[in-house]
Length: 227
Image (cartoon, rainbow, N blue to C red; front, side, top):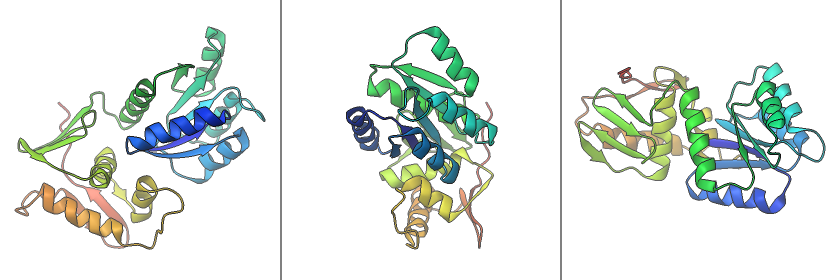
């Protein structure tokens, strides 16, 4: 996941970045509402975590502005305010979930993954595409019951393509969702990862899970099992 975090408490912000980054997630952090609002407008994110009590503007204002502009990524409110009125106000502004401080990092990560899953139309952590099974909770991939060992980046690449199954995903989008903003986007690392992923998922060349569309990007081609 590519996560936008808006949190003004320096220690907590650094703890979240370290904890979620240690789980293989990309976290871009902002300390103010204005900075976070800008980042959410200009860069693609899978999900945002927004503190309500920001120094320059209310988190609800940030959320409301994004929603008015059509930004539809899931948003989780992080707040020290336990009153139900604050929670309701945040949700009515356009947030999808909330978490009250203090909290456990494991719960934050689980809630974020659930939000991203639901946004993609999946209700369960195990996704099935014909012979391919993707367990998003265990980060485990199988093809015809055979375990496929993937690196962290290979898994994240497959996860993003599977979330957008049937859609064309550009090389730039894949790079932005796998790496931090300062990564060299002229690198051919995406082509290398796609090639390795194909060989691991489809060693016989019969499944063809990932299509290349020249000049446009890639598409996960296996049909989703709606059952």
